[in-house]
Structure formats: structure tokens, C-alpha cells
Image 1 (cartoon, rainbow, N blue to C red):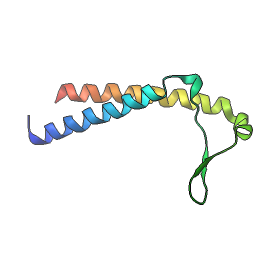
Image 2 (tube, rainbow, N blue to C red; image 1 turned 90 degrees about the horizontal axis):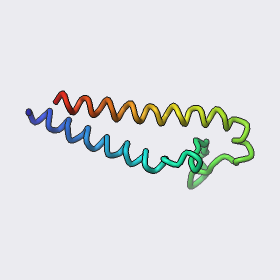
Image 3 (cartoon, rainbow, N blue to C red; image 1 turned 45 degrees about the vertical axis):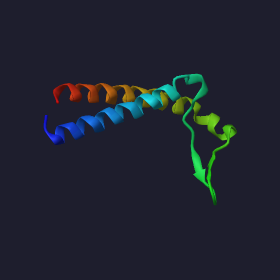
Length: 84
């Protein structure tokens, strides 16, 4: 294994760890939802739930798509590790 391959393997391993951490954090789908936020003067603020209810089905659909993409990326990275 070359130094470059080793460095790539380490990066891939770290990335898989990051993605797994996110998956664990958002595991409970009923306790997480995509949301819009806006930048205030000093911090980010969430858009009110009252306004977001109008697009809740769209947000939930995209949430499922993002979760699937996370799984796909993990599998792709694992396959790349095997080829190294």
C-alpha cells in the first residue's frame, strides 16, 4: 500500500465514522425533521413551526432521500476501501 492509498483509506474511514455518527443522531425519524433557518444578527433561528407545516410532506420526503444518500455513500466508501 502506498502512502497515498493509506492516506485515502484513513480519510475514508474518518468519513464513514462521520456519516455513522449522523445516522445515529437522526435515527429516530419522529424526533427529527428538516427545517429552514435564517441568520439573525448573532445566531441562526428556526423558521416557525406554524409556517413549516405547509411544506411538511415535502420536507419529510427529502429527509428520507437524504437518509438513503447517506447509506449509499457509506456503502460506496466501504467498497472503495476494499479495492485499496
